[in-house]
Amino acid sequence: MTRIKGGVQANKRRKNMLERAKGYRGIRSKKLNFAHEALMRAGRYAFAHRRDKKTVFRQLWIVRLNAAIREAGHKSYSVFLAKLKKNGFELNRKVLAEFASERPEIFDRIQKQVI
Image (cartoon, rainbow, N blue to C red; front, side):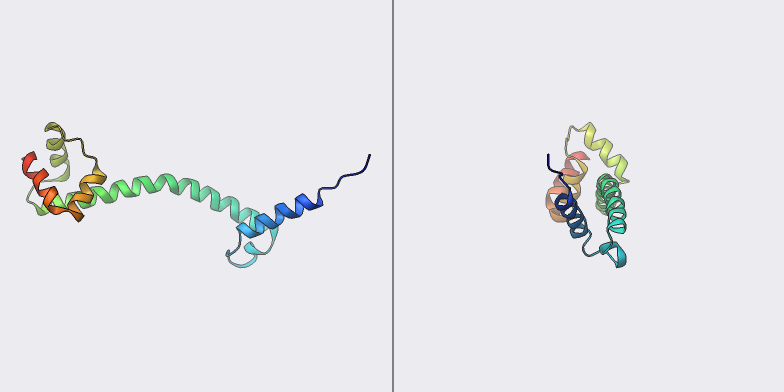
């Protein structure tokens, strides 16, 4: 039986890893071991930050809503949201923040119905 060596596959693996690390600074884009370490770290950060992004956007929507609500003369965000739920509105923070910033006439109508 002939001996099979893995040179072609190993080279392909190395080449792909260095290709993915292209654009990294310094030795991280040139040497395999450093590139592998950088890619593993980048993957961990990407995984964690995909989850963090959801929290950051929720905070942004709340800040925008609070500003629009206080500008309209209401007491606070939490009081407004409690009244909103009490009156049976099922709009989420994302939609409300979008209305507040991009379509203020719709947001004003919602506020008048809540009061």
